[in-house]
Image (cartoon, rainbow, N blue to C red; front, side, top):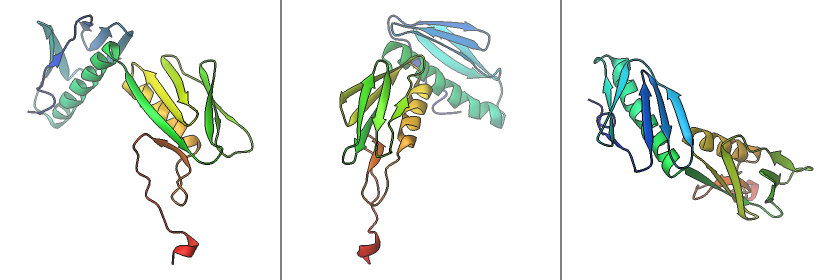
Length: 178
């Protein structure tokens, strides 16, 4: 049995879960998320706890058991508390500014790079070298943060670029380091 799949998902107060076959809708204070799951797993809601049950013991069902539980737990956490990713910008003259709901990045190109905020995502720029990406969908928050990082990934010689907060960039010596 999957160690992750057999753990129940606790529903915080203010979160409502509706199961309609393999379609699960989660409503909370921050918003609403809905997802279509595979038919090999089913969900039961009782006493503020959601349990995920797999139909049989095939390899695919066992794999989907833990995945479905993790996705459901992320949905519940997202609508109650939300998710954030913090990006740091390093480099002389590199900075970000908030323009309405979008971000303008100045990261060493001859032009500025504008990043539009998709629906459900909010940007914050507490300081010019820090970007906070927030939202209720963990997958979408991570993808938007990865797309921003892709504009100018950190390079190994001087460490300039956009990186996740706390990310370690392995440095190289360069030509003079021999």
